[in-house]
Length: 437
Image (cartoon, rainbow, N blue to C red):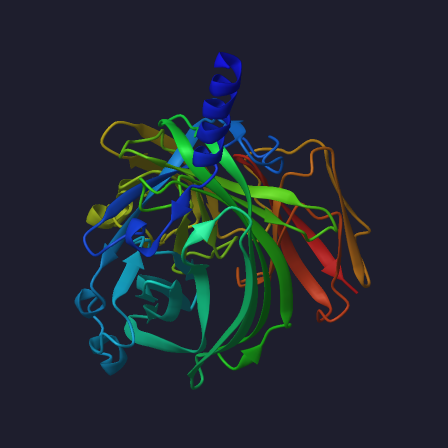
């Protein structure tokens, strides 16, 4: 009888543990702030799941961090009637990130990006978004109300739940931006058990697999871009004691198989080692020409630039994140960037040749071959380690193409002429001149 009693208790405990439920009241509310740390391990097994499963990712190594802040929609700074009606939206989130692209003739940045949600007892749905586009000194607010809301979660969330929904929106800013998006979201709660991350152990988690099929049409500055259809999926671990997913793994399927592209986990606020890095345009500037610096540093909050041009006086240094500088005389200049946060500092230097249209090259990438050159349509890249970024620019530094980890690219639509191809592998950069027949 005792054995039967103990077996009954074990079975009851197992069943109780398997009945984890995540409700609307378990999700974030106005005033919550969370810190999500990105990890570098992209090749671990994140797919295996099941009932009463133990996921142990305690060995993840954090590399950077973002803050997620939840606010009242009316406190986000946008004067948009839609967000002042609580029947439309009652929650917003922002990461406060401000990506900027600094190129000759145009400086484009995004700030104050906010997502708007309607949280109810039955679901959490995204109903809108808003952000500012900063274009050549002009700030343009973009406000977007979804035509069909994106239902992110249906409550209560329990093991075995499945659901699927379609959402859509369109944005139209004449002469600047047009975007039309449709999204199919499919959720499946395919696991429960315990999860260990570098931040803690969670014994009452649900694992949700979300597949996303996005169809995008975009036009920038009046030029239409190719329609893109992308399929991604996310694994989310949820615990009723936490108001945000404990861990999120994002995967893409560009090559026919799933590849992990991002891993983040809930964490406390912390600093990570900074990496100073930048590029500039035009690639081969002339004396008196304005040079635009694209800051690609990571984990940094302050920046100190030294352009190696003492003849420019006070303009020889800058603390801007995306500065510009004019080198008045021909010569060779060493530009130095120091990127820091409260705990870490890193420094990066790059030699810029002014007044010489010859190809510049700071660090060699010995295992690179670009062929044929000159070329007619296809340009091939033979790199021993396919972990490089590529961009093609004209002789004024205007970028025409950007790619990553590619072995060949079709440039049949490119006008004949001379172009500069830049390849970056880690912190090495090489620029070669290519000729299109």
